[in-house]
Length: 333
Image (cartoon, rainbow, N blue to C red; front, side, top):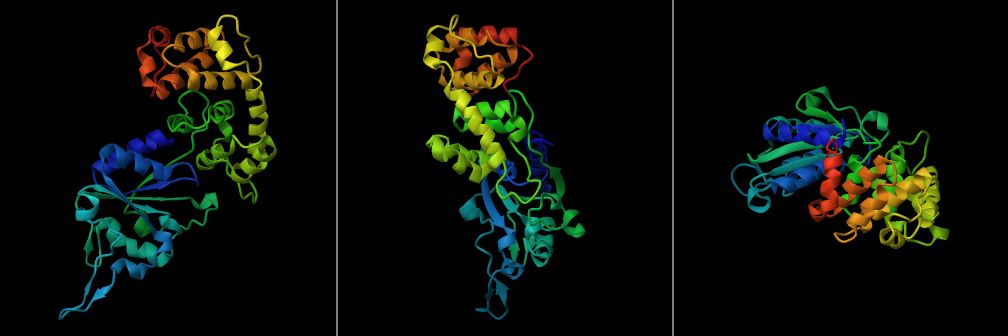
């Protein structure tokens, strides 16, 4: 299921205190789901990397100061005084951990305790890992441990349209509109697992990194982006950037929306829609809408939705009100 559906399922499991395991390929934002929920609920979150820990360390260190040996609570586990009364203990890369570590997790996941440590009542257990088919050092989860979890399969969203989850996220965090436009145009490249032994390949995580290099000189940009998302995806992006840079001036478009030239190339139409959505403000939104309405409806929708998600104040303009009446079948998500 896509990230939005996965987040809804995880929310329900958290409400009922059911430990949940999110499965999916690398780089699609599994950990981001947990972060989003903890932010919305103002909870704490502790990221425990089981793959880098030793099972013996879960018990803590022995305290031999008394007549009997007790175990000092591991400091990295949730403590109410320090971390708050509610939160998520996030067991990332759990199925990349040694078998002894996965076995040690049995009690923590089901009984909420390990050694002398007891997980506070308001804290929930969420785990995540890659599938064996993803070739990401994942191991088979022991059936006894798997049966302690509810399971959520998380898939990348490579759908076209204004409501693509990953592109919406990139818009929200203010990534370069050139990249937004490109991924609108080529959504299949949002996530593509390697077919052979490629070391770099496109994922939402790697595109977020690639965005940092779009303003580098063109003589270096291709190699920098290739090192993050792979040669094929980087070459396609480079071609798209050339199209973007040859667009009519956005200032000219907003000054003369009824006569400014319209691009014919589909890539250029995606590009100018994204560029205008990032540029318009309350004063120029009406002109931006007048221009984009000269293109097919899909670009009008893309422009309006992206612009209003970026600046919710634009939803109070008359231009947006008129657009919403004409497009009652479209939701902002």
